[in-house]
Length: 373
Image (spheres, rainbow, N blue to C red):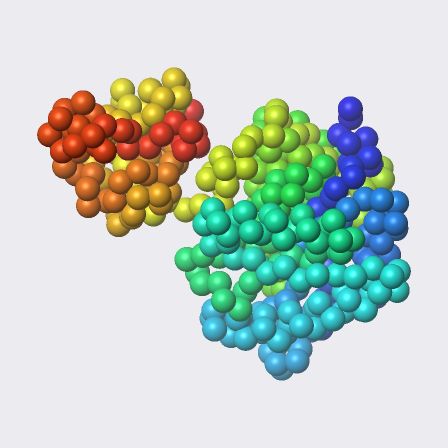
């Protein structure tokens, strides 16, 4: 099935909209823009499609009420603006969807909710139940409690992860730019990329960053498209004004073709929703075993360990030149590992006990991030 047909016929869709598409330059909610977006989503919802809306705009919506002239730079003021603005934003969505007899539910997530397995499962269960009850979930990053260490940084990646979390049939990324171009859209001769089949189609493409109100930009949108398509979810990127045409599969924006099959939720979570709490440095033989032959990581192939982490934490696996090649959930605390390095599991079990006759990281808990060292 063509990617446009996949999006047109999708029965479960995640739609992400950025701050600049919802607010005025002064930071207030643009009621007409919100209503126009809801008109499109409600029409699709009445047709039987389940919709999850990942909406930025909380911080931007808080600027006006707090009398701030621009997006604050310090985290504390950002959190204060989000606290005020989130209520304004959800109230506006509640009122707008109510015109069609639809109810909304607020779901605030942090990157930590995706990193921690139990939180991840709970988020999935909540979203699934909201959809079963006919609710339109409004998802946003929980900016009021997130810290620099546990932030998504933008809602594009969050939307891609949510699309996999709920097993969506399509992801729609709405922005203030109508498509992905091979250079700045304002540059004469810039060419719209109608379709992206894979990384080779992006060679030489110049990607811009976000503006004064938003935080993303084309870099984060392309990264989000890569995450979603890698999970088998087709993606369309276009302007919020073209949302109806994008959902109908019309020739607007940029369509990203899905790649391969849906991976397990566990591996996608490990690759894109976690940050390594430490590093294990591997010799060339261990890299070959883990990356090429997809084997478990044994103590004999590890040359050194960095960082403080506990058993069950995600750690990055590095090749001899220091490049991260994989990530996995480690079976030992950081303090235990130095005494295990370079030794066989049989010797360790004989000396230390049977609980040490196991791998540092099981192959089912490893996701490959690079194909070379």
